[in-house]
Every structure is written in C-alpha cells, then in structure tokens.
Amino acid sequence: MKKILVIGSLNLDMVVNVDHTPAVGETILSDKMEMIPGGKGANQACAAGCLNADVTMFGAVGSDMYADIQMKSLSAAGVDISRIIKRAEATTGIALITVNSDGDNCIVVVSGANATLSCRDIDDNIDLLKEADIIIFQLEIPLETVCYGAKAAKELGKTVILDPAPVPKIFPEELFRCVDIIKPNETELQMLTGMDHVESHLAEAAGLLKRKGVKNVLVTLGEKGVYLDSEVDGIWRIPAVPVEAVDTTAAGDSFTAALAVMLADGKSLKEAASFANYVSAIVVTRKGAQSSIPTFDEVHQYIEKAEKKKAD
Image 1 (cartoon, one colour):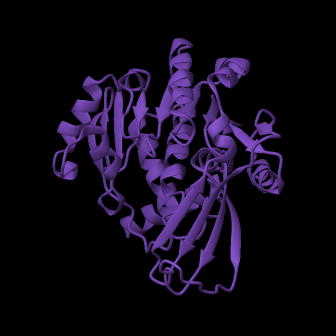
Image 2: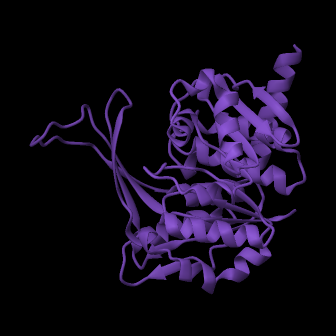
Image 3: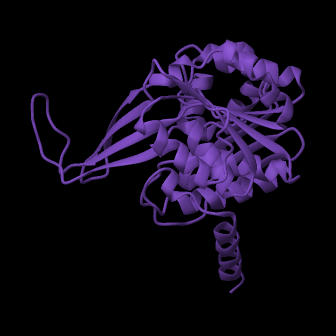
C-alpha cells in the first residue's frame, strides 16, 4: 500500500455537557468534562491508521499533558508519530466545547502549537513529503504553511488532498492549482465559490473549482449523499447510507481519511468515495471524535450487512 502523510492540526477537545447554553454573565453547573483527542489533522491520521494505512502525522503540539493524550491515541491507532514537533514555548491546541441538551454546541478553539507550524518546518522535514505518495492538508494550521507544503508536494509529484476547513475569508488562488482532490461540504463549497444554493447547482460550482485548477471535486452533502466530479470517473451522485445520527464529530475527517486509504490501495476515486461514505456513516452513529472511528474490519462487516439487506 502507498504511504499517506497528514500535515495539519492536533487538538485536545474539552467537552462539557450542560442543560442549556449559559447567557452572558451566567454560571451553570455540569456533571463532568471529557477530554477527547481531536483536531482535523489528527482525526484524519487516526482514521487512516484505524483503516490499516501506512500513515504518518506531521504537526506541532506543546510539551504538556494534552500532547501526551493526543500522542497516545494516535499511536494506538497505528499512526507514525515520530515526527510530530513538540514546542516547549507553546501549548497543545485546545477546543473548548459546550454541548446543550438539544445537541447544539458552542466552540472556542485555542490554536496553540498548531499556529506555529511553519514553512521552515516543511523544509526541515521535506523527506516526509518525498517518502509519501498521498498528502492530506486541512486549514487549521497557518494558510501560508499549507500553500507552501501543497506546492512542494505537487513539485514532488504527490497526490494532494485538501479538506478546505475552516474556509478562510480570502482563499489563495494558488492553492487550487496544487490540489488533486478537494473535499468540501455544502457550506464550504458555497464559501469557496461565492454561489448561493449550491446544492441545486453542484455541476456549476464544481466546474468553477476545476477551472481554478483543481482536478477532482468531491462534495459531502450529509443526508443527501456525495457529489463527485472526477476527471477520470466522470460525474456521480452517491446516495447517503441511511443511519440514525448521534454525533457528526469527525465524520468529515474520517471520510477524507478513508478516501485516501482506498486510493492508496489502488481503488478508483468513485470506489474510494463509496467506501468513505460507509465509514462516515458509522462514525455519526457514535459519540466523540477519534473514539468514534471504526476499524477496517468493522467497516467491511458493516458493508456486508448493508449489501445483504439490500439483496433481501
């Protein structure tokens, strides 16, 4: 199998469940706080590891207990964590998440060490890019670093996958030209294209991104499935897998990782997207970020049951 490199963020999610979201100046009580490894980059690396990929995580953490929790989770998933940078002068990224009884949340992200990952760090670890076949980026580290790393990856002839979240106010046009596969959700596609009601104009929106230089556009639409505009496979609508969603955390990250894993195994983009669709369907039926990610065997068992149910 080909090698996957994830360049991106590592956070520790501090999740507090409350009866209602506090008003300004209000103090309320909660029964507990959970500390769950997260961050889009780390979630993607963890998912790839759980799916038996040869995957390395590259990013930055602080020299603190939060980093230790994150490293333990990634290592348990089979991810190579040997090149994650530990910053003595920074804290590990943290997401403070308040979830009310309706399931609505409020999130404050402290970027911490994620904000320190630099172009120089890319240069100092260029061997990682040379050794990888597929390189995944997101946008929770400095945009300048993402652009620099993606350009370096393309110059080395690597397959670049971009999960464009969070979408910046000004998206650098040069980044589009470095991306082989871009995987926005519906909201992100709207922000990237400036188009309203993109779900009704997916072909037009995807075409706009392709004219900017992206080779393949893959849009996740939640319960409306997946839209794929591939330079090889053509245009496809992949229906959603019907499930009762409990928590959508890390569903998109797991989709991205599963996509990369299947491509690394020689599958077509359409085949990879179909597999990734099942992975994210499993994730939304479980609570948490990395704790919700299934193993490769679990996914195949799930697919077999789903196919058997269809046949019956």
